[in-house]
Length: 350
Image (tube, rainbow, N blue to C red; front, top):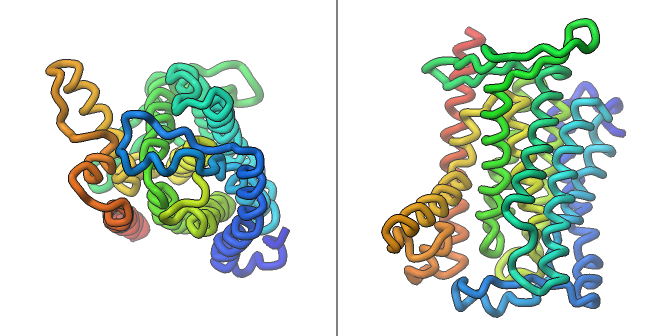
């Protein structure tokens, strides 16, 4: 644990979190890829996907396992084992475990679909609910949602207090429902974004760097180190996931990264701003929702194919062009969100 040694240099610890996580991922990913290849554990490509993706069939998957191991190790090496970090880490790891079970199901049954959508949602909702209740009762997170420069919405008006301890155990029903929708939504939005080589890792990298900066400015050093570690593993993973990918992160990685983003938003009270910061993920998820709803009603499609990145592939964009342009869009969204946060926090300080 390096945190006590550099306690006077918290900024260094955050940057160290990025570096250590990157190095660990770069070190452990190659032998993991070799193991997956020798075990013939590979990606199952959806039958209705772009024809150019057929060559990806059999590419090693479940790279998220190494990403999560590297992130956990980095947090233990760089940060302090606080209760806050423990609960945040458990939420991320449990969601990754859910994704791992899903990935394993796909490989064993040799199909592109693993767990049923209902099973995924139940598991994700359970994890999100426990985390949110812990955040409210043990970490001082208020059941409110702030829309910068506009208003703060109190979602704690309908709260049940259970007799537990000195102050009781609060269940703010409206906030729990809102937070569950946010966390589960982000979880699946990142998962939907993970459809092209380097797309999810690159966009999550950008977003996590912004979340690390926000957590640091909010005096949440340990969550900032967690966010920095998640950014670091994305950098290391990109080395192997860049086109043409040597490995995919699978649901193991994408679901965990999405849950991590949502949990960090709750801890830093950026529940609304994260929708802007992760605007690309929101757009990807909305494209699927719009496509499904419109097709059910009219039997016609709004997009050539959903999620959104496949639409542009169908329009003739190369995979690398889609990825790089989506990185740029993600960077713009993250910059806008962080600028709003910074400006609003400065007004609060003033």
